[in-house]
Length: 127
Image 1 (cartoon, rainbow, N blue to C red):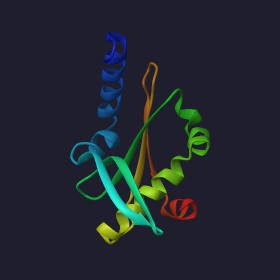
Image 2: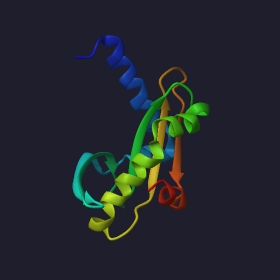
Image 3: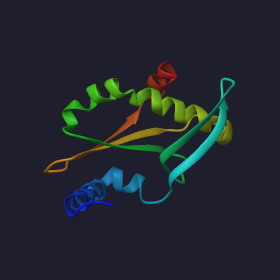
Image 4: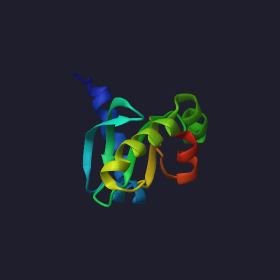
């Protein structure tokens, strides 16, 4: 159960993401928390995707302390490897390597939000 303070923070984060013109559009329609199960290089795998849009956009949502540190966070926490893995799991089903977006929102005021489309060549290297 969330405390009142935690619930208020969740509401602020959600509002910030919805106010962002690109993030709001990416998350307007689609499937949240979709599960994919598939063999990947001979190993049975499962992934829970944050969001899969109707136009086959793969979207991952992250929170951060400050957007200027997102690139360092992405390296430290392996975001690109995670997203490359998700994209590779979906490829046999979709027949294509999907566009991949990362949405990040700050966990403190002013709750800035940013959206990045991850270059396919970067994901290929991470894979």
